[in-house]
Image 1 (cartoon, one colour):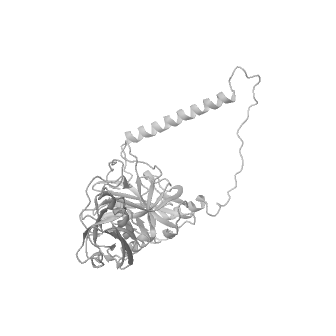
Image 2 (cartoon, one colour):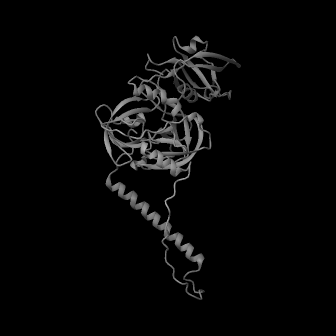
Image 3 (cartoon, rainbow, N blue to C red):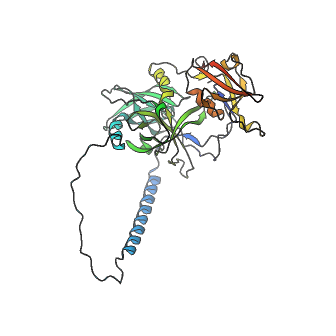
Length: 413
């Protein structure tokens, strides 16, 4: 949601080292998985050209389809022996029946009042994103990359589903989980969303995405959960802290402007925050949906969200090590995991006996396939949680239990 992203080349995540949760920033080109950019206003001439092109293409498709149908139907051919009797369209009464339980229609009716469009403007530009109402008096959840466009001196407003709008201010932001809380001013009686448990999701389960793609507020799309716990790395800040999370992957159409909107189950409960997409390139700088969208799972970020609401600085769990993909370090080995590159001083990993060169393959029952996988998995825990780390050392599998550190006293995580 910052300036228009430049689509990077295809391929796996090129970052060599990833802080988990401290260390120098990774180097190399950005990944293809990226936060959804703000839908920024285009020049009128370009917009008109795009619309006109769409209309022309649609018209050609319609004429072609009609021509084929007429040919097959035999209308207008010399072999026709009689004229068909003319007919006219019928007007019928369509009763307004209630939407079936668990239908997309029912979910949309229930959740649309709890999702908003967010308009942001700052020194680097302007655009729009989406948000989820958390309280009746205006607390709204969104992505950090939506809120940060406003910066310190920018402006922000919220458009509600009923057509009203209000100014908004930032309550708190957390770049590491790409979440933020804002507050709409002078409002009451809003309909808060119902928060569900993302841990209850199953692959293949139907979900609905609600937001404002390309500025089109109150847009509803549907699909399924394509995968769970997908490590998604959307970049890092100046201190080397990566924004990596164990994402919900979905084929529900998600586009620029959907950022911060709701991913809900068919009970109408919010299970994720739509945040990023996989791009296949775009000649206009803003790629559209290719069926690979990613949402931040609610279970992992609710503690962070509550900290921001309470006016606290968000904290995150950490091992206190820097790692790299194990498979990329030794061409003779096919072992997948996160190879320890550095051990932080006085870190919980160091105290537990982990050493440089160890390859972490599991955290509890979560299989670790690389550096991003480890970072995303640790981000799903909270400081003080106890975990069992499985690792390889000199070809031998070892395990150790440790208590995760907090980044409360450090800028690194």
